[in-house]
Length: 164
Image (cartoon, rainbow, N blue to C red):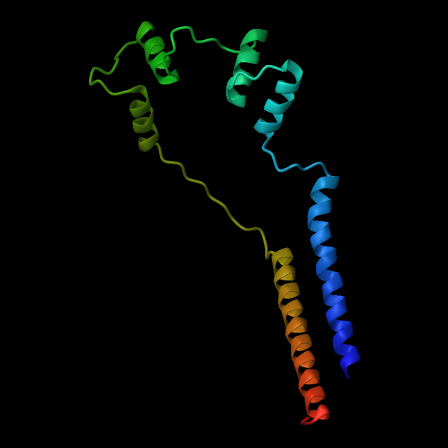
């Protein structure tokens, strides 16, 4: 009578221990150290250069790209929107807006007037989704039946013991 309960508890404890060991062992086995990619890049850069200058990983990447000549170096420090507005002002255009709107506002106005219509049609019944739904329902029923049978067995075992 107590042997079955002891075996269930021992099995549960072994299962919980196995799950907790797997939770810690699997990420370590795959090399997940919990750091973001930018943090890993900064750590690798710091190991290569052995000089820590305190800049963010994105800033370090931008500086590295600029040194290679592949990046765009902004000498005047203006924002990209300001650079776009300056570029547009230098272009000879016919019918420019004189109302003082920013380029972003002009673009938003153009997009607001366009209408996008997308027609989608389902070809047939989604049997895959139906199968997943049925599998979940049947699995839930099996779990409930198992729990009910376990509770019934526990109740009957308690009645067999009788009062002490």
